[in-house]
Length: 30
Length: 274
Image (cartoon, one colour):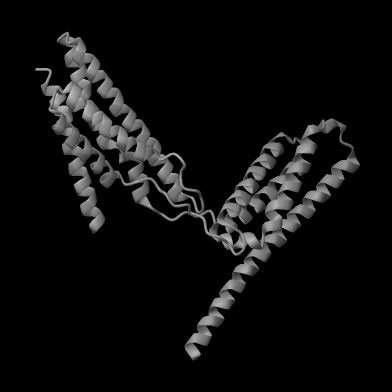
């Protein structure tokens, strides 16, 4: 059970962290 | 029986989908590179290209780490991987995220650091760490390291015998050697299932397989046309003896396992009676 929560947290952190950086670089082009 | 593997569909599913997210991360960067190129922003093009390569490196290292982890999980006894690919990939992801946000994205330093840390922690939580413990049990007076080495050596020798046998044209001898190889492989599988057996079968692993490997290598070195009937007959007789010996070895292993069962049953019986 706990490992499921950890994975979901990990997924959110990963997508938010990397996604923000990727979005920033894309937005910087316009 | 020893070759039968437990049905485990989750591993094969993981094989295909693991690292999917890392592929997705490449898409926006790919777009950034293309857009920067077409809008003639050369500096942005360079930065985004570097960012793309960094993320590609993360993907590559992660894939290596996943393969390594799978092999570790499937092996019965093995050492922990020396190069921790997943860990390196996690740090590289931090660098890649920081670079993309700060250099390519022009975001404030603190924001960029925050996202990079978040990405690294997220990677650890989502993909986990590399295996760090050796999967080695000490077997009686033998250390796990020795067990692994002995077993690996035996397997290498067996592979060598198999390679030698491919070159042997004499069909009768070829078949006999093949039979011995099959039997030896069964013994190795039995030992892999229960490493305690290594104590019983040490002579087989170290002496017999090595002896057979030496004989087949020497035989192969000769031109088969030059081998006289007497030598051939001696070789055939020897392989018969080898096969018989291997069969005895297998029976001994089985008897040993039965002995373990008998002991455990006796122990339980005594416990129940008291």
